[in-house]
Image (tube, protein in one colour):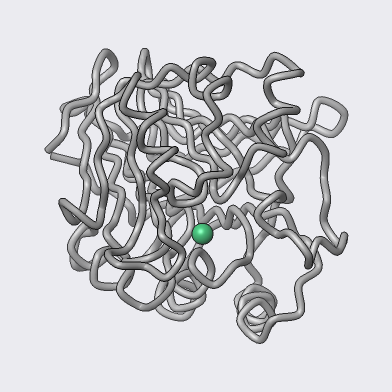
Length: 290
Ligand SMILES: [Zn+2]
């Protein structure tokens, strides 16, 4: 299904200062045979946590968060060809353990081409391990900021909507959720919004600024917490499908019944705790569940 021509990956990164745009592309684009124009997006069932995997037909792969454990390694093992030990881009929405812990394992086992994160100050042992691995393996890091566009392939880009400016080095230890990277995967006519553990206090400024939130698929914020996915936010996103990354019988009571009620009005709800991995395949026009 996917052309895996990855022996000669040359990544070029241009950070256009001023406009704050980030473009990433691969020489493999030129070698692309064009036999498939389908991307895959997997919402891995990692228990109580989040992990979204994106694979482009040119071989570029993105992992957004890694869930709470090394479960993500088994998921990647299934999603990637046996010989593929490189993930081109890893995005850490925020450094809470249910998003970060799996990514630390990924950094240990895989070659990672590029990291995007907020770079906020966080003194957990886990985040220190993450930072040490980045240093040890000399992985380039881009700090997320609204307005950046990461180009992954022809017609495939990730647009960053939040945080509104760079926040690296700042201390948000009281509420790391509010620092979550919010971004939109755009492939042809399809759009998928990911929100990390963002809650209303992140949704509000995005709404006030008139950010382009509309998306076909919404990765629901903070595992369906009652403080996320306000009615106003939901009407701006207007998703057809709402994916809730949540573990069965979690101690937080996620997803909240109020949030489920709001979602039910507008979208079909898919939950990892009910159906396991949630996988989509998209061509330029539509995404279908695999
Ligand atoms: Zn979380």
